[in-house]
Image 1: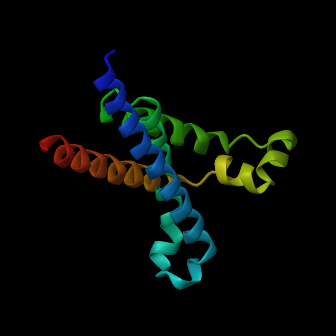
Image 2: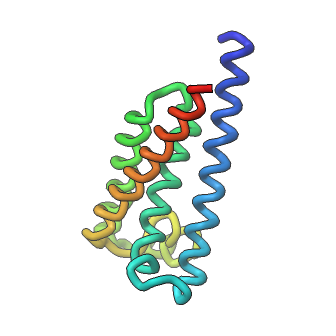
Length: 138
């Protein structure tokens, strides 16, 4: 890989890690101040933003791959986490009882969360493609 490619990837990685951090902050804010949001947004934003964060995380890790790769991996990851919530044993429920464990692993299976993840990942993919399109035009 040449120096220009490394710089290009470094810049994109910085953009994606910034998107991850921004999305995490928005997700935490949507939980903390949910009472200030319209009910529909308060009920759905957290899971959608979590899925968007997963997408941006995969884009950070796989910066040289296509957005489609990150989309597919994000869907598999999010669905895997959601379906893992059907497994209810003491050891994993103790992890889920912690703040970090609840944020990462969730607490209980909800089929509607699968739809929220799809919407969040689609939004992240569209945002990513729009930014790529306008950035690569330059």
